[in-house]
Length: 314
Ligand code: GFB
Image 1: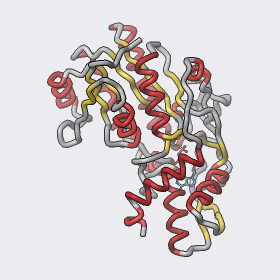
Image 2: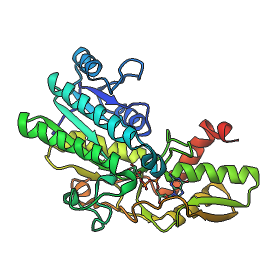
Image 3: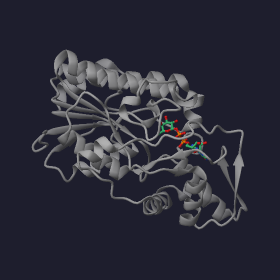
């Protein structure tokens, strides 16, 4: 439905884990990829964003730029997660319409759904119940982004769509233990425990919550698939359709890293949402499938960590 041939596609947030995966994926399309470093345009500055888009005139935009983080970061910095994400999305949506961008893909997250949504979570569960308190700030910003896209379609007929990825991991992830998500955190902790000869590895919370994990390269492939093939009012869940407990994930990562010590629990840290497995019926119904199995994906993420971060962690 949307031909990328000869198009200029702006990947906002190209240096992030998803943004860099999108740049890798788009390299195999016959399009031009536009990127801009923070020094060139501050996405929280409306005038700067409008000037950049008016000058560069992209045909399509993917909003992969966001203030992101794990459960502790979200719970600790609500203003940052709400304000920065609202500003980034509002500025890019506005500038895109002003400059006549033909296709826009907005990225949200599975945390937009109610804490106790029926599982697997269908797209129409949105706004049917209270949010998870640890990340409601980020969730509200992302829900506002979905609504902005729908408003542009309703008022102007803009072909702006939204995708809601599940928990992601892979190359380019954030391995800072205070702000990261669970996969990079456990990879780093298992590596440091192994190399230091520690007997224990600390996992936050009870380990009983369940999470669905998708490799960032599979996510990027799904996003390009939607950019080319989807043009609808409702957002689309992007996941793999399977989940596991945090404890089983930790055991899998320990096997991959080669740490054989004990897993202990820090119950002073929050569990967050008990489960957030999303229904992928809509996306799979369009013909897309993920390709990267979790254990193999984790091994690749550990290799990337060893190449890029092990020196910091030593
Ligand atoms: O990945 P995570 O931080 O984010 O936590 P959420 C997932 C689960 O892993 C939680 C547990 O139950 C954590 O308590 N966990 C165990 C750990 N050990 C660790 C650790 O060392 N670090 C971290 N970070 N978690 C995020 C939202 O929620 O999901 C974001 O806060 C976003 O906004 C993202 O939506 C996709 O999955 O709980």
